[in-house]
Image 1: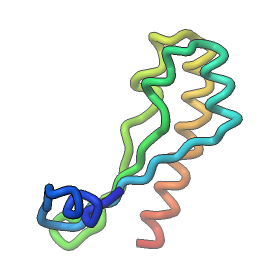
Image 2 (image 1 turned 30 degrees about the vertical axis):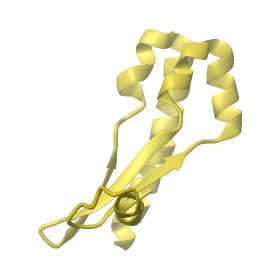
Image 3 (image 1 turned 45 degrees about the vertical axis):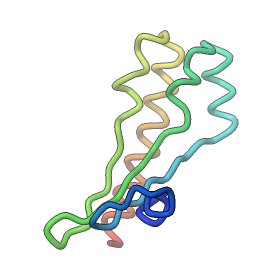
Length: 95
C-alpha cells in the first residue's frame, strides 16, 4: 500500500508513503498455534516516507505487543524483530 492506493480510494496525501506487510507463513503458524489471538498482530508492517529530503524507514517493534500473548509468542517476536531490524538497516544503507 502506498500514496497511490490512498489517492485511488479518494484519500490523497502529500508526500510519498509506502507500507509493506510482511509475513512468513511458518512463523505465523508457530505463533497462531501458541495463541490464536496473535492474529491481531499479523502481518508485521514496515513503512517508508520522506522527511526533510531524507527517506525514513521503520516499524512498530513486534516485541512491544507480544508479551501479553505468552512467552512463546514473545520469543518468536524477538526472532522476527531481529530479522526485520536487519532488513531496515539494509534498506537504510541503500537509500
